[in-house]
Length: 173
Image 1 (tube, one colour):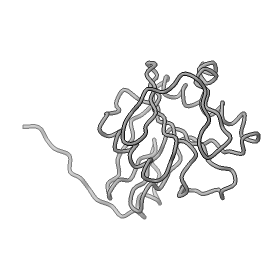
Image 2 (image 1 turned 90 degrees about the horizontal axis):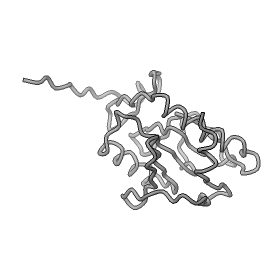
Image 3 (image 1 turned 90 degrees about the vertical axis):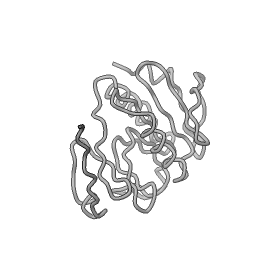
């Protein structure tokens, strides 16, 4: 008979006052370990950060990796990359909806877990939610569905940023 893992509920203060390597997420009182990225994951993460950070002053944004976001009263997620409005105050844990979040798929990611996470981003009010798969299949999450990501550049709502997949791909190492 297979053993089942015991679910241990902890107070949010324990999560917020602890560090995890890599950082973990807090969902309904349970600390969830995030899949550990590999080279392709890290490479995409770095390229997205470089693309947005090199334009941060022009577009008046901040780009951050693996920063905690309070998506609801009791849930904290950690997007791979997020773009923040520079006009908003710097927060140690993000409570204002980012302009965009990017999730880069790892081999250990599951569709059901990812869809739950993406839905929480949307409920928080994040308008641009992108899922990038290092294998080349990229998606935009909207209205509870994954749709193929357009290959042509597009503006990110709520900002003057432009997402250009081809330019980001040029930054891959």
